[in-house]
Image 1 (cartoon, rainbow, N blue to C red):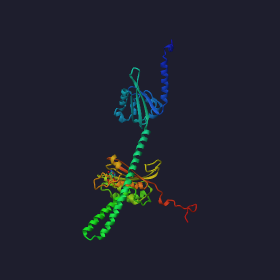
Image 2 (tube, rainbow, N blue to C red):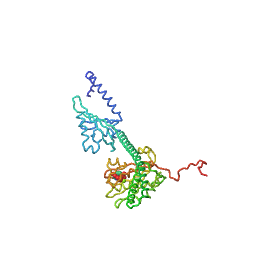
Image 3 (spheres, protein in one colour):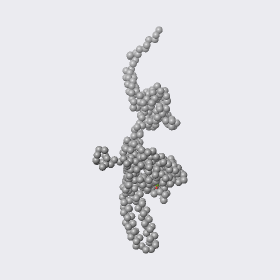
Image 4 (tube, rainbow, N blue to C red):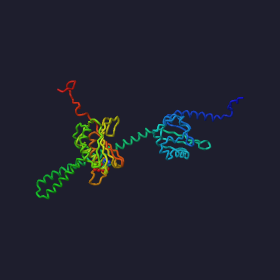
Length: 407
Ligand SMILES: Nc1ncnc2c1ncn2[C@@H]1O[C@H](COP(=O)(O)OP(=O)(O)O)[C@@H](O)[C@H]1O
Ligand SMILES: [Mg+2]
């Protein structure tokens, strides 16, 4: 005989339980449908017992693949080794809730930056029945925040250098005027003086004035006040021409290597000043490699659809990179390296005016300078210059005739 199916005894059903079960069901459906958050349950030991669409979207596992697995597989190997998964459950069990941010791993092995909240779930008697875990992928937000921070730092740096530039320019101009007065006076004295001692003294003063004048030129260069003789030139050609001179800046153990993009890359630039800037960078690189190494100069055309740096809007640029495998710079040194008179070299070895001149010159030429460096690994200095039309094809205003031919 078949056992009669058990009918619930209406009188025994607690209406509150039905309501609770119904809301529980509604809640389950709601959680299932959430796509922006991974919401799932863990057993007290950390085994996944439920899974929603958001979890599948964020972590990449289908429900059937993950239920019954330990949740530590979402963690990086480093975190697993450090016992982070167990720690977060222990904290949630002790304090009721644990909240963390960190890298998590998707099924395909890629990482995302996660915001995680774990709540301990207890029954009426207070014993732990599991955990509810809510994970959000906030990689984009973290990246946006990091990009904003970087842009702000770059902007601050540019503003600081512009302020130092104004000060430098004022001092250099005044200083130049004083030197001019001294120089004129000295010329008169030179004509009048008879004795050899006088002449020697005047010669010494003349040299000091010349040194002062060259210093003010360097300062004016940082302050972007030096007149430039710019022409449209091919950067790759220019670099190839000066390569032998740059190589001589090295010593027996340092090599200068070129890795130029094939073809021509035209920029509007003062060639002599550009060569001096390259030399400055190569000398710094050589200084940074006391036991030898390689300085590499490379070029590349870059098309940027967004602002490249605070000084450079979207557009086409040539990047000229000078990189070394030297001692590198600490974050502190890096932040000050472009300032005039900042040097870490001993007195007599460094003037602290090399990078500041390069910076002033490149900014004045419509470009920008980016430094990156790692202590013990090396440094790279990237100069960006806007791409120009090659001189031969610069269109001349014609005005007569549709074909543009001149008469
Ligand atoms: N390639 C490089 N590697 C490591 N540090 C560098 C490099 N280039 C510049 N620096 C740092 O920046 C400082 C300023 O450079 P610079 O303006 O050329 O002045 P100087 O070379 O006279 O010290 C240097 O003293 C050094 O600390
Ligand atoms: Mg230098």
